[in-house]
Amino acid sequence: MQQNVLILDFGSQYTQLIARRVRELNIYCEIHPYNNPPKDLSDFKAVILSGSPFSVRGEDAPHPDLSEIRGKLPLLAVCYGAQYLAHFHGGKVEASETREYGRANLSVIKDAEVLFEDITENSQVWMSHSDTIKELPSNGVRLASTTDVLNAAYRIEGEETFAIQFHPEVYHSTDGKQLLENFLVKIAGVAQTWTPEAFVDMTVNELREKIGDDKVVLGLSGGVDSSVAAVLLHKAIGKNLYCIFVNNGLLRKDEFESVLDQYKHMGLNVKGVDASARFLEALAGVSEPEAKRKKIGNAFIEVFDDEAHLIKDVKYLAQGTIYPDVIESVSVNGGPSATIKSHHNVGGLPDFMKLKIVEPLRMIFKDEVRRVGAELGIAQELLGRHPFPGPGLAIRILGDVTAEKVRILQEVDAIFINGLKEWKLYDKVWQAGAILLPVNSVGVMGDERTYEKVVALRAVESTDGMTADWVNLPYDFLQKTSNTIINRVKGVNRVVYDISSKPPATIEWE
Image 1 (cartoon, rainbow, N blue to C red):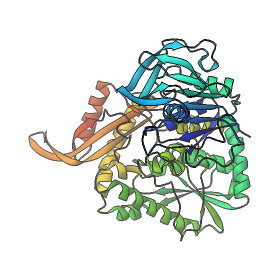
Image 2 (image 1 turned 90 degrees about the horizontal axis):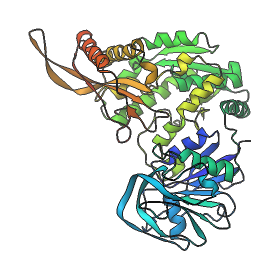
Image 3 (image 1 turned 120 degrees about the horizontal axis):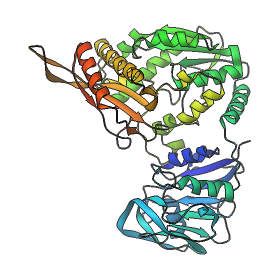
């Protein structure tokens, strides 16, 4: 049994980063909304309260019930959590004279405090709040300050309750991971047992118990997530797994054939289904991004319904859903985090389809999926493959989708991706792709005026897709790629490069 950490979500944009940092310590954690925590806390060894966009002084401020946590479990309150503990328990929180946002440095650290072991004065931290703690709560002991924030960290005397005004989970807090380790390992005594091997053993056992002798149908995409999910399921239920790879007409150039060939050597039972005409027909005239996703999701379900009927007594539909898909699709477990976009492989099935869902990767991040895949012996070539959106090129074609637009984008994408591989840049990029813009631009080819499409190239570096920076690709590479695209792809006369990071932009344009 894993020793778990509970993260209570108050709607912070950084809540999922807390989970990522905890997982990096080989410690399992779960995110639950502050207003709907687990009823049974016996599985948890420690609790972390997230930040929040709310002010504790506001009428709409979240009010968690901590009666079953405080004094009973080690507690670390981050930002809003720290202010909440102060404001409602004998301290005072007021609006800051200036908004405290960005880099700061710890100017004072109290001696002999376990929370700050191996963290020195002047350590950089990241602030993000408009309120500040003016007076500590009852029995509060100040642990650290910055130049502008007197009560940057404190603890409550007589209990294992700690609070910090900064965010240890973000990259800019240079000793943030050390602080989390000090709290979870040294103070809370949580065992660091969350490893790929442990995940495989636990998941295989859970799948066997849940599925039994029932049959499962799984949609393969050729990507990391569905491939790892397939191998996990195959390890658990063997011949009762039926894999289907659907050509939705929105794949990369020649991908349908190459992916089927790739799976021949993995011992999986895979059937290829060419449903490209069905998907393109469903997308005809549809321009709105969410509408396109839903059309694709519905067509995907219909194809699976047809194929599932060909398999006698199939009971489950398996999907390669991972944690960021869940986080971005719905507010976490009905909690306060904002919805960004829907994912076609997240959520329930229509009533007419009587299959139950199984998602073996639902609670892990992309880099964890790759480590699990390595543990399962999957080839590095497949594990190193860039993420590719479930709706495929449909959400990289802005506006309506036609067969001709798909052809153009497939050609552009192939030149870009193959170029990255030839220049030894592919493995330095987390995700790359091309976007067909809904605009034409004037150009000149030879002595003729052209009025053709514009494509944008996008390449980002990331760990888990929650945040991402654009990649500074060599100018020589971009120049050659642009020239090759314009010369070889009929219908394109202009190429641009996207230098937006996430946030504020998302990785995909739709």
